[in-house]
Amino acid sequence: MGSFGEDISREYIKETLSNLKIRGRDGLGYWGLTECGRVFSYKELEYKFDGIKKCKVFLANSRAIPTTEIQQGAYQSIENQQPFDNERWVVVHNGLISNDYELEKRYEVKRISKVDSSLLPNLFGKLGVVNGLKVIDGSYAIIAYDRYNNEFWFGTNFMPLFYVKINKSVLVAGLKEMFPKELQNDVYRIEPYTLFKFDSSGKIESFSLWRKEKNKKVLVICSSGIDSTTVSYLYKHLGYEVNLIHFRYGQAAEKAELWGVEHIAKDLNANLYVYDAQPIFKEFKNASRLLNLRKSDKELQMLDAESTLSYVPNRNMIFASITAGIAERDGIDTVAMGLQQMDSVYPDNSPVFVDAIDFTLKTSLNWYSNVSFRAPLQHLIKHEVVFLGEKLGVPWRYVCSCYYPELDEELGIIHCGECGCCQYRSIAFPMLGIQDDVLWKVKPIVSIPKVKDIKKADLPFSVIPYI
Image (cartoon, rainbow, N blue to C red):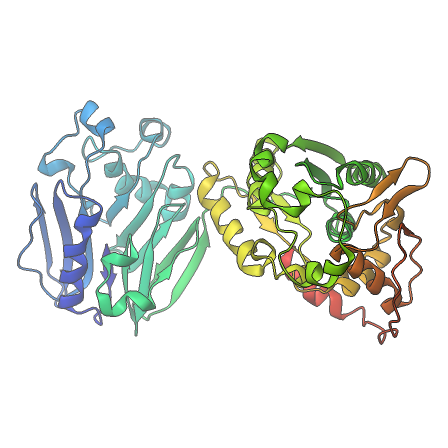
């Protein structure tokens, strides 16, 4: 934990300090700077504290001794208890540094004790905080105070770290529940690979801890449907190297979808991964219409379009997880899915789901694997997606937007005309006055007035921020 500024009360510090034992119980240490400029510090092998003064700077750590440190001789002793400091830096660190011995040699810096964290004050003195953290392999949430410049730094790669700002002061701790109860609803979680610098004026500045800029390679989860195909052509238009992944999971549309996605990949000159997920989804066969039925029910078409009638248990989560692993392996920094607003009735199609997966990837993939999860069309509705796809040159003949299609190798995909997906398609194209050469098994009867012309300037505003 740490605090900076005169608006963090002694009571807040004591309560937070008391709650550190949630995470570590093998010792306690703290360092403080009083309002009159007096430094005080305390280290104890037991978890107890006394004599906490009102401070303008305070850093503390409760120790949890990992078995690796015991093996390396860094067992219980006062010299191994944080905070660690030199004449400039005071540092507390939660995590494990796996390349500490390598960093010692490479940058000719010495550790203060046998504990890996004790390297940090001298490493920051040599490289600065930002560059010092970027060379670390391992896990970290750190709080550091720069005595020379009176600056307070705190950041993390993927470990939990939270803060609350009170006027021109800040209180930082590793878990939300470590904060005083009255502050817990006001704390913010620091985004992965983010570092903050806080100064005495209350100004806060952020720094990225990623080692490299994101590349322009995308792996699109592509069913060959309207949305995922449009996303694929959108990224191609924006200059990305487009790769597609198609999942075979026992869906009724598999044969038609695969035919479509193979032609789409060829048209895009895109690498295509075909992933056999049937062994996973066979467990859900009796829980999903898409997996156990082979024909649509006309009477349920509107319900299919407006509910989760065709839900497959946790499908998009599973797709996203597998795709992210492949993207990480192959050095692709963006995973994209064709989710749009009309499907947000499904929990795994909503903006909340997109944001949650994007955050999860930063905390589940390996160190510095900066893979993002994106759904550029998430705020568009179906006829807007079709409008965009038309402008991008999507070959609609290869697009399969039906749950229960048939495939004729010569004619192409024959849509059932009776499922929820077909309902969307049968309306979207006439709304725009666009000729759709789709083949129907049962041609839907629709009478839809043409919408007013969509302003092209409006679509980038809705799409580009989510690339």
